[in-house]
Amino acid sequence: MTDALAMIRLENVTKKFGDLTAVDDISLDIPEGEFFVVLGPNAAGKTTTIKMMAGLLRPTAGEVFLGGINIRENPVAAKKLLSFVPDFPFLYEKLTPLEFFDFVGDLFEMPRTDARAEAAKLVDYLNLGDYRHSLIEYLSHGTRQRVAIAAALLHHPKVFVIDEPMVGLDPKHARLVKDILKKKSGEGMTVFLSSHQLNLAEELADRVGIIHKGKLIACAHPQELQNAGGSSSALEEVFLKLTEEEGEG
Ligand SMILES: Nc1ncnc2c1ncn2[C@@H]1O[C@H](COP(=O)(O)OP(=O)(O)OP(=O)(O)O)[C@@H](O)[C@H]1O
Image (cartoon, rainbow, N blue to C red; front, side, top):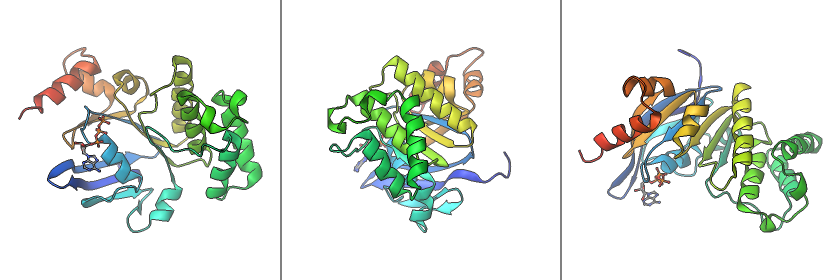
């Protein structure tokens, strides 16, 4: 992966809110097709990092690049590569999922026939068939979450950023979401996923990053992290040890 173009690049990114440094000088390169999972305790700075990647927050210092494009200098071109699913996605309540997919397809200037063909595949895959004509306002949290993920996948994003994707999903639908993200990553989509679920990182990640107190304190293949924690440590032990040691210093 030496000189491959990083699909996501954070260059000395810092975000301050008044006196609080929420993200502290993070640098990170994520190559095309990598499945990157970021872990960290509450208030570590994960969502703030993600919002800077998605162009929703401007770093106090440092730069973010998507596909080599500086998101501050060229936000529209950078965001065309991106899909971002927040932990509580915004959806238009008065649309049905199919109407919403049409809307998203138009937003990304997809030909209607392509958008509908892709939407049909995603509806099928994510088990949304029974709800495709229901108003979004009547859907359960887990169903809405799947609608948001389907909408985000519709335009074949190069970079897929998702904050806490499994919240509210039952085991069957969590499995479907994990499988489709892993499959898309295998096809070249770069995934940046934030979670509290360590097993998710063990299962899916090509690389795991641990953010604590705004700093990226570890970044490696899950197995390497486990090895670093002792012969057969579970990722949980490594995570607890790293975030505890850094804790009261
Ligand atoms: N808009 C804001 N104004 C002031 N402080 C903020 C703002 N957004 C986040 N913070 C603070 O920045 C720190 C990092 O928050 P962030 O939401 O990035 O953490 P997180 O790692 O996503 O946490 P969690 O796992 O609890 O969701 C926290 O102390 C939070 O209170």
